Length: 237
Image 1 (cartoon, one colour):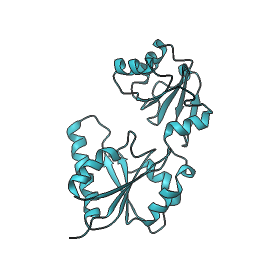
Image 2 (cartoon, helix red, strand yellow):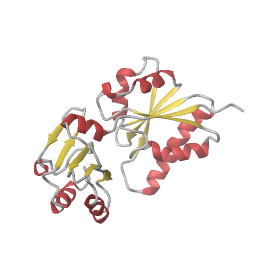
Image 3 (cartoon, helix red, strand yellow):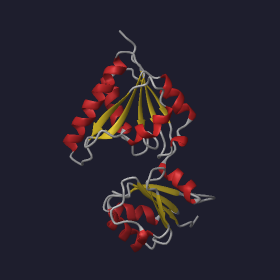
């Protein structure tokens, strides 16, 4: 039997190609195949655009379409189909990389594909190459300290239930809210009700055209781009 290739989950950071790690560049130049997630509505991949300056001319890249939906049946079908495409490469003994925005283990498509690949390719070797997260880059861009001393830092999803999110924020010294684009008016109202508007910085399209930082949450757009997040500084520790 052919020994399966190694799967590399590679984080390529939030947007700036110069934030791609040296290890990520080395691995991308060494693997036999590179895969990137894209929306099923278009043929464009943000992760692909980020690594494009680092890919050897001879290195091809395959986009895997994933629907932007909450329809679980549609998602399951897409994950299964795309995992099968990657499994075919790995089962043939070829190494493959799956590139993802930010870090592969934080709100990433890679986390959904990985268990399916392990089912399809027994004995699959997996290596993770961490990437700089959007909130780390946003903190650097704004000069905002994420946590110090005895403070804690909450990393939360803006699409979480209001009650759960509010309860988590009540116990946090500082927080990061990712996925801050969906139902943003609701999220803004929630933060205002908790008295956190003044301590919140809104960042969108970090490292891409149209990058913007708003220190006043009221000035953030009603319908922000999906590459948007909030940094919250309470500092009670």
